[in-house]
Image (cartoon, rainbow, N blue to C red; front, side, top):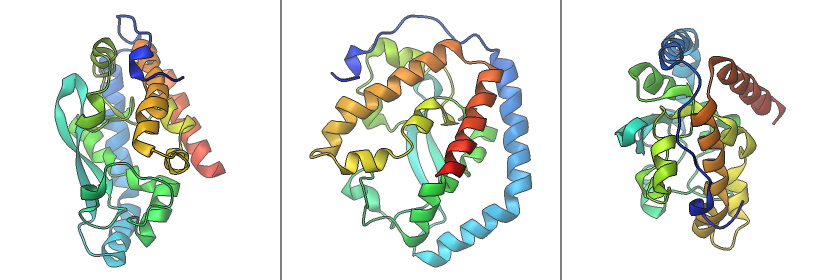
Length: 216
């Protein structure tokens, strides 16, 4: 789709799934994941720390449900203070660390977001949380619908656009390409999810995400 986010169709409504069931699933899944993966997460944390100077976690302000801001947890994959040179990661970005290249490709840098899920800022599945700069480009009706659900670690947009930074790397103007081409496609997925999410649908997305990561 082209023409910018304003071209998106949107209708009022909410998902068909139960918010309570979704939240209970999130609590159980995130708590179990953090406990079972804790040795693995500690090894990654050590790798990040030894690989380059800086903190283990990358904490960035994102927009959550209802427009509430929160600071997301990700394993740091770039040199410290890289955001001063822009918030988009494009192509073979020189700011990405040695460990970061692997963590980004495998999506292991996203695992600390299980903390955000347990805290209630995120869900396992849902529209990816954006920075305020790009949420400002959401059309009002689309914004209200997308922000009516908790943002997630994964969704159909994450799966279909898993190589987003390579796509932007091929663009003459990555910022413009993100706003005019990438973001509208993401918003289409976000709107559909917010209108029709379900526990079964979330499980399908989780399985599809794991399959996509493995096949890469």
